[in-house]
Image 1: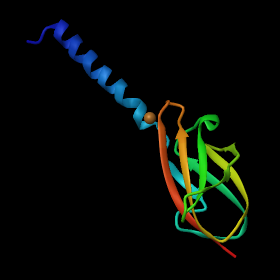
Image 2: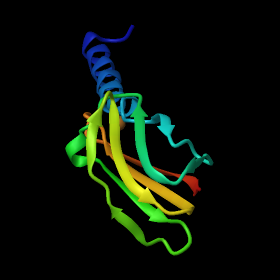
Image 3: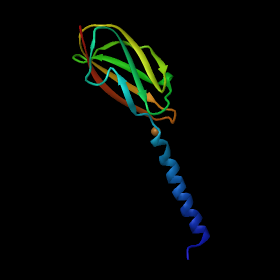
Image 4: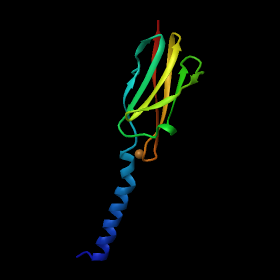
Length: 122
Ligand SMILES: [Cu+2]
């Protein structure tokens, strides 16, 4: 028969393990994006909107828009909080391929990042 002390130790191990893993279930994953990856949008102002599956810290999250060919930063994007996500406006984008890189801090303190490509055409 297993002693109480051993049982308590085992239970605390299991609990510690569960707690250590739990926060990682909550970090932010992209659930929708506008423009979508691979989308072609008309030239002019492009409104960028990303939504995640959990709440994020919008002050410590950032979006970077790059010209896909030479990877030059188009301009610093001003982001504003949207519902569980981020919003930004890129005024007057000329035609061409672009890459949007995002780096998000979720409220559990984990950083996630990713990117998507879209095209601007007149
Ligand atoms: Cu996490």
